[in-house]
Amino acid sequence: MHEVKVELEYPVTMPNGETVAQLTMRRLKARDVVAAEAAVKTGESARGIYTMSLLCGVEPNVIEELDMSDFGRMQEIAQGFLSSKRKTAGA
Image (cartoon, rainbow, N blue to C red):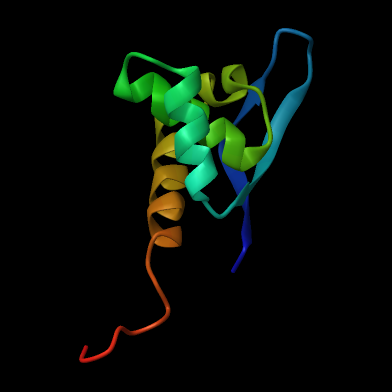
């Protein structure tokens, strides 16, 4: 599973009138963490929003407008990406 399409329970209407009803999230890479740390110097929440925007290929303001239930589901999906399918030796 390299990407997950997420249907938003509460679609977002952006200032330009565009409605975002679905986001596609890719797996997190180490470079995403580095990019978020470089771009956002303060605030864990702001860094999380920036990271989520990288994974979804959208501007951070789209993620900022998400309903918290949709944002929470996306956080759960991102956490699932951190699980390894591969067992380590001796496990």
